[in-house]
Amino acid sequence: MKLTIAAALGTTLLTAVPAFADRAAVLGTYADIAEAKYEDSLTSAQDLLEAVNTLVDAPSAQALQSVRDAWIEARVPYQQTEVYRFGNAIVDDWEGKVNAWPLDEGLIDYVDGSYGGATDENEYAVLNVIANPAFTLSGEQVDAADITPALLEGALHEADGVESNVATGYHAIEFLLWGQDLNGHGPGAGNRPWTDYASGEACTGGNCDRRADYLKAATELLVSDLEWMVGQWQDGGEARAQLIADETAGISSILTGMGSLSYGEQAGERMKLGVMLNDPEEEHDCFSDNTHNSHFYDALGIRNVYLGSYTRIDGTVVSGPSLSSLVAAADAGVDTELTSKLNATMFEMSEMKTAAEAGFAYDMMLERGNEAGEALIMGAVDALIDQTRSIERAVAALDVKTIAFEGSDSLDDPEAVFQ
Image 1: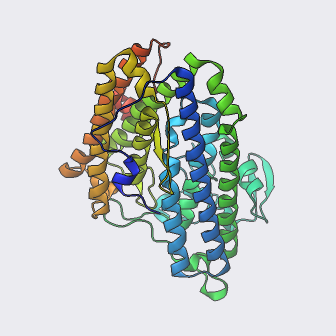
Image 2 (image 1 turned 90 degrees about the vertical axis):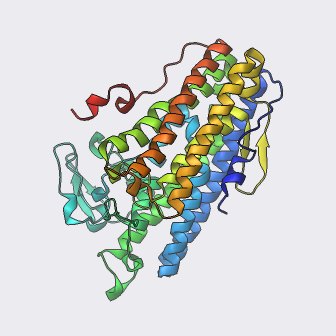
Image 3 (image 1 turned 135 degrees about the vertical axis):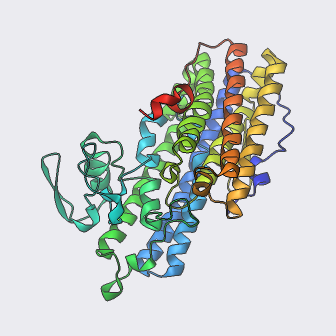
């Protein structure tokens, strides 16, 4: 079910009235929301796998579109979990399996001739596992006759230590569903034909049976990875246990995740960098043209963690004592300021999302000289930076240890981007 902007926010953008809470209760809410978000991500991934199985069993244009729709729906809860990355080592160590980006898609499947070939940085940039049932990788012969989750996870993902050799997760699946977006700054996402999964003479792109095997294996692996992460946040799970073991460190973890995602990761690496380079390849969901949603739900994840309230994909709400209440007790002015800035960010994200859904796609916004596009993106970037300053004030108000948020050259040393 696609959430409207209002439903996703769960509350009005202008009002948040937190109840007083102690630190242990706040950590409990944070963990409960994490569990709910990962459960929703798992449920959505299971729906995606069901659609994949239908496509594999009976390929058609409609079946491929259904899988694409399921993938986009699956991004809604998952992107809201990204605020858990930077403050929780268990999540950060795991995240690269499910959401690594960018990727050298030629590792997986055929690519357009303009993509180029192997590079000094990545010898396997055009390995094309789907077309090759056997190959040499890091000096070892690999038997890829059967494309399985174990092959993707054990032999291929980050092969030879190269981070862009992304063989698993949402973006590998995205590429297999849409193919490359060859439109540059023009309208349109990737346009992989459904016949890339057809049988016999109807097959396009070659190796349709192996492509189907790869898609199914990658989606099965995504489901199992999310099952594991759900367990980490359930009662007795390691992530929950680590969080609540030290209340001060736990509060620091929440703030670290909020500030690092807000500043270095989202404002910097995912948004400002693309504006500086004017590169459509700097989209987060570059194959599907879903980047506006990824950015929107990342920002929403920061907000719902602070306010202690998350609207699930079935419309129910998980809520409880919030970090906002702790900050309000320490310094009501800081809480009011931070809540207002989180709302301002969501307003900017909503403007960008609405424009994209009306046909002004994110890669079109990135085109050099497109003042309207740059204004939409930079409005959100500036709001994210502004809210980070208030997160820093919240750190001081709560008197937790000094936190170093993730940075980005695009924000901290712009000249280095072009060196």
